[in-house]
Every structure is written in C-alpha cells, then in structure tokens.
Amino acid sequence: MDLTSLNKDRKRRKPSVDMSTMVYGLVPPQAVEVEEVILGAMMLDVNCLPEVLNLIFKEVFYVEANQLIFGAIVRLYDAGKSVDIRTVVEELKALDILNDVGGPYYVTKITNSVVRSNHIEHHCRIVMEKYMKRELIKISGEAIGDAYEEGTDAFDLYDRTDNQILNTQERVLTGQVKDMSYFSSKVYDQYETVKETGVLGIQTGIVPFDKILSGLVAPDLFIIAARPSQGKTALAMSLSHHISVVNGIPGAWFSLEMDGIQLTRRLASIDAGISHEFIRQGRIPAEQEMKFFSSLDRIGKAPIYIEDKGSINIRGIRTRANILVRKHKIQYIVVDYLQLMEAVDKRESNRNTIVGEITRGLKMLAKELNIPVIALSQLSRKVEERSDKMPQMSDLRESGNIEQDADGILFLMRPEKYEFREPVSIGGKEYETAGLCIGKVDKNRHGECMNFAMSFVGQTMCLGTHPNDFGYTPPSTPGTWTPYKNDNDEKPF
Image (spheres, rainbow, N blue to C red):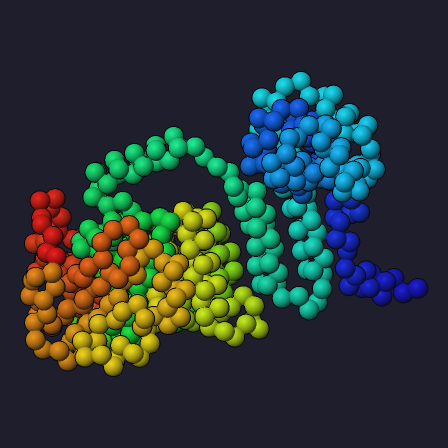
C-alpha cells in the first residue's frame, strides 16, 4: 500500500470524541468514594440535604448508580417525604431501578463510610471539580474532532467551544445562595463608596447623568435610545472618552454601525477639541496639528477594545466579553446598536423574539460579569408624528422586551435638529435650543425619572454637562473633560 496515501487518509479521519480514554488511555477524573460519602450523609443526616442540593446536581456523579440514588433522594425531598435508607430503597423499587443500583445492599453499603457530615460542602466541591474536568475533556474532545473536519468554520468552532465551557461554569455556579451577612457587607461597602465619590458606579463626566443615575452601575443594562442623528453614539463616545481616555478605566465597544477607525477619529475630535470634519477631510489648521497628534497618542494608550465586526449575535458578544474581562479587566461594555444584532438561530425571523433574546442576553451578561452594559437603540418614526418630538416608551422598536429587561432607559432629543427656536423649560429652568440636547430618563429601576439638559457640540459630536448647570465651563485644552464638581451645588431640576 502507498504509505503517503495512508498518512493522508489518517489525517482526514475524525478522531474519537472520548479523548480521555481512547486517545490518552486515561480514566476520566472521578471521586467515587467521595460520591458515596455524600449520598450516605444525605440518607443519615437530614440537615445536610438543603446544603447538598444547593451545591450539586445529578450529573456531577460519575457512577450511574449514584446518579440514580441521588435522583431518588431529590424526588423524596421535593415531595416532602423523609429521606433515609428505607425510604430511598422503597423509592428506587417504585421506580423499578433498585436492581440497577446494586440492590438494597449497595444503598446500605454507602452509608458505612460516613462518620460525620460536617465536611459535606468540601466533599461536594471535590465531586464538582471532577465533573467540571470531565466536561472539559468531553468539550475539548468534540472540538478536536470537529477541527479535523474540512468544512468546519474555525470561528464558529471557537465560539461554540467557548460557550460550552461558559455554560458548564454557569451551571456549576447557579444557585449558590449567600446569607444576608454577605449582602449587608456589600451594601455597606457601596454606601461608603457613594459617600466618598458621589456616585455608586463609574463616573461618566456628565454631572446630571451621574446625579440622577449614580453613574454607570454594575450590573445594570442601560439603554440610550433616540432617532437618527440625535446623539446616541455621541453620548456613548463622550462617556467612553471620560471613562477610558481621561480616567484609564478599561471598556469594550461592540460596534455594528461604525468601524474602529471611525470611532477612533471621533474620539480624537472630542479629545483635541478639533472639528471632526477637519480631521476627516485632512484640513486641520497647521497650528492645531500638534494638538491632534497628541490626542492620537493619548487615545492610542487608552484601554478601549473595539470589535467592529459587521454582524454579531449575543453568543458572540458573550464569548468576546468574557475574554476581555479575563485578559484586560474591562469594566463596562457598549453595544452600538441593538437592532443591527443577529439572532443566534439565523432561521428566526421574528424581530420581537430576536430583540428579546438580545436584551435578555445582555442583561444576563451584565450580571455574569458584574459590569454595566450600555446598549444603543433606534426609535420608530412615530416620534416624528408628534409636535413636541419627545420620545416615549412606545417609540422603542420591539419596546416590550427592551422596556422589560433594561434597568435604565434614556431618550435623547435635540430641539435644534427639529428647528425649534423657542427656549425650552427643563425642571423649571430655561435653556436656549442652540447646542441643547434633552436627556429624558424614562425608566430608572433604582430612582426617579426626570429630564435634564446636556450640551451638544456639533463640530466634535460630543455631549457634556450643560454650561448653565453646576457652574460648569467647557474645557479649552484637550484631554481635560472632567466637569466642574462642587458638593454644595444644587440640582437644576
């Protein structure tokens, strides 16, 4: 036989999925004796049942007989019946699986090695770790097998494998209840932080935003919604500039509308205070070029990570976000914007279902990573039909899902864009429409809903604290967009 052909044929073959036993010749990770101690303790000490059931589930047991016994114990516990050797044997007999576990002898035998149950949590963690290792071997084996297939998409394979690992972690961590002393200490820590900084989360640099919403707070999902050209991306960019460029806090952008170069150019315009149009057209005045180059250098060192792939779904964002948290310690995420995201199942065509999947996924991601997530959203054309042009909840596309999952919703409206000339009253205070952007907090899970004023600078497409509020004066030098702060200032609303 031609050895070259034989070698090529071997390379094309898909290896066995069970990589632990058939490839490496190893026995999968297991702790059978510990499994028996756990089951024995559950039958001998009713007080340990809640703790065990909170920590583990049937699949963590390596021995099938132990899985069946655990399942019988759970059935008895859920039915409110007593759990002991006799009742477990009867339950297994009723399920017609007593012989499958080795009969009454095996059920009795596993209680013999139990001396005390006060180390039950430690035992549960041992079998949980063995289970996680077995799952990792299984997932890795499947990934290796799929990687040998010529038709496998490498990026899809990476995403799928990473999600399988994350799902395993999520299942292991789900339901680990903490007592009130844990949460009380957290509330105390947060209270002390607010006393010291004035905000509960990350300071955004926009004073009324921070005062009303306490900054960007984890694990909130925050929606910024507006009609086109009203300032959604401008606000998100302004927040990122203050948070990451000025203060060096790492963050991630998932931009489905603009690419990384466009976003960086806008950041440079904000930082240097130079017209975005001048930068884009290459006609920055000679005396301002060094200011622009300095801003580019400053932005180049900023911990902002941009994924500008034109199409992405919630699974892809989750995978990349987890990597960015581990690798770069990101503390916030921006998604621009919701309606451009894809469904995980590309066969799904119902937009309400798709947006529901996305918003629920983003909220779960915020909780999983314990960081705030900002998502930008388009509004329907119904806004244009009203005389005041002020958005409301029903204007959100697929509004039911977004409204339900979001912790905060901020609408934006620039009166100047609609050629309004009369001064606008916000919280009893008059504002000229030139350079005005109205922020309308229409949902705030943690506090009041109200309107506030922001300043919109068209040349640099940025938003900030309005000059009429808080004694604030816009900066004249680049890279200094920290607002005026005075703890004695009164709210203008």
